[in-house]
Image 1 (cartoon, rainbow, N blue to C red):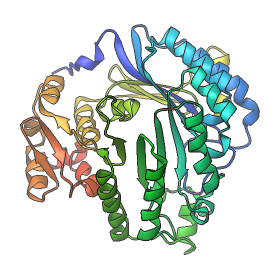
Image 2: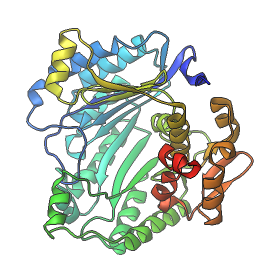
Image 3: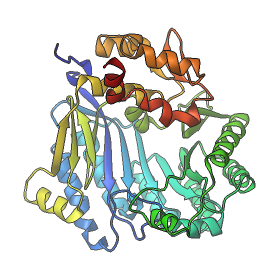
Amino acid sequence: MPYDDPLRASAPLDVGLYVHVAFCRRICHYCDFNTYVGQDSLLPRYGAALRRELETLPPGVRASSLFFGGGTPSMLSHAQVADLVAAARELGNLPSSAEVTLEANPCDLTLEYLTGLRGAGVNRLSVGVQSFDDRLLRRLGRRHDALQALDSVALARAAGFENLSLDLMFALPGQDLDNWREALDVALRLGPEHLSLYCLTVEEGTPFAKWRREGKLVVPDDDAAADMYDLARDTLSRNGFAHYEISNFARRDPERDLRGQHNLTYWRNRPYFGLGAGAHSSFGGRRFANVLLPAEYLRRVEAGESPVGGSEEISPALAASETVILGLRLAEGVGQSEFQARFGKGLSDLYGPAIAELAALGLVELAEDALRLTARGQPLGNEVFERFLPSRQAASHG
């Protein structure tokens, strides 16, 4: 039976538009993203190449959001950002009211630069604070200090930003529950509209992974990390934030939806189009990945060649699995009727045994409208998600 996903044929095709800025001035000790140091001289060409890649958007695309991620997008000049936003409006039909987010390092932010970003059309700023403790920031290898983190928020407000998100990390080496409580208190005093809270993951190939193997890095255990997560959920809930995704919290506002609209595209498994070195795209039933190295990306784009380095077809089983796994990250869960309409079968038809077992363990709940993680299931999300992988489903039916 052919996979007739209505998202393949929607016209116009609504996509989240992502721009990857694969440059940093320093690589943090925990980072495994596709980013490079010492290549600042490529930035002027890189901005022009992003503009040229925008011109290759498929016909009928309509961008619903624009997100500058990295790496360090705040290494782009505000003139480059303005050119790309204007191109997205012209070539990608990006509405003037759409969310336009730029990730920024606190020590890159001046009032002049931030005012330029606002004038360029950026209406949401995501600041990589990570911690307000200078000792922890040094351990992470961050370029900024706590004072610069605090100043960046004041500068963003002075420049007119009314939608501000802060990134914080927990379960850091040397961090305890009291330190994390203090970080949350400082963040709340700053009054952001959004908070993203990430538990440290030690990734292979990073300095942190090397130091842990050598016994030079000790991080809080799983129980301590769970206590920090619970503290964050409780604290933010009491202070007017909605916990709408496993790691993300938006201030409750009757007049504005302050959830990250671009990331909702990913979590709802909707189409997106990525620009830049190492950027990924997903639309039309396929996934695409650009070449990783900025120099090779530039060579290809400047020669009029495709920057795509590889692609894969998304099978019906994989599309359904990813829709469940990504959707379970959201408090709204995976909508029963939407899933049925998209895949021609219900959640219970495809995943009945797994759902029953997870519900018995108190990790998920299946209501008439949606399948959701329970409060108990949220910190155990990865264990839950594994049950919906195509390989697990094939094994359970074998």
